[in-house]
Amino acid sequence: MSPALRAAEAGPALVASALSVGYQREVVVENIALELGRGRVLALVGTNGSGKSTFLKTIAGLIPPLSGSIEVLGGRPLAAPAKVAYMGQFHPSSGALPLRAIDVVRMARFAKLGLVGRRGSEDEEAVRVAMEIMGVTEFARSPLNTLSGGQRQRVFIAQAFARDAELILLDEPATNLDLPSRETYRRLIREAAARGTAVVVATHDIEEAVACDYALLLAHRVVAFGRGREVLRAETLLSTFGIVGRYQEGGVVVVEREHGHDCE
Image 1 (tube, one colour):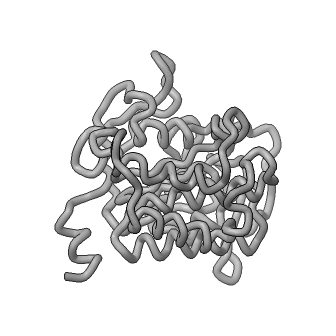
Image 2 (image 1 turned 45 degrees about the vertical axis):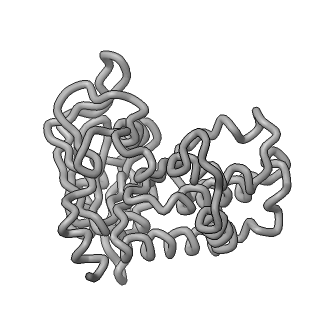
Image 3 (image 1 turned 30 degrees about the vertical axis):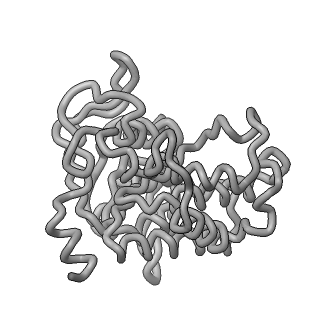
């Protein structure tokens, strides 16, 4: 059976209905409604503070929804932690503990192994492949806090993909990456989707969003949701970023910045 057929039979990876997300009683974004199939990539597009990270944390089960409903891989968030990989913007392990790069990537396998499980050849191979693809093998045994920002980011991306998850959540993964590393991680996303994995990536990069299957534009509210090339229009970019844009030779370019328009 092909990965696409298996993904279709497994049901959607993510379903949100009348969903409000936020912290305690403070709503950041309300009325999110969408369905994401397995093998599909969704871009969360918006400025810093627009609600992208809050929605990702809700999907990951790190914060509870304020109202509405959300299903992740057919159950509640955190019901199947081994099947979900989450890469946040902030990593408490970056300097607090004397961890090596390889230790961080190996953490990806903990959810599958449990508290007393021992790593096997399959686990080590997943770690090795992810580190090799992201180009971090050469400093595998270097303390994480001795690495540059870009090197650390590549380590955390390797960790996310070493999990072999059914749903991957990435919060601004391109931060501090050079152009070759950006292309590598985007290739990883495409390959994961081809295997039936669903991916949700938070970004403010319009070009990256255009390449995804779907885009959800946020500005403390839902501006638009749909196919990337259909929803990334001048009026939606204005509402999301305070800019006007247009397509040119297959890409989105900024034409004009509107002064006095605040999306934060």
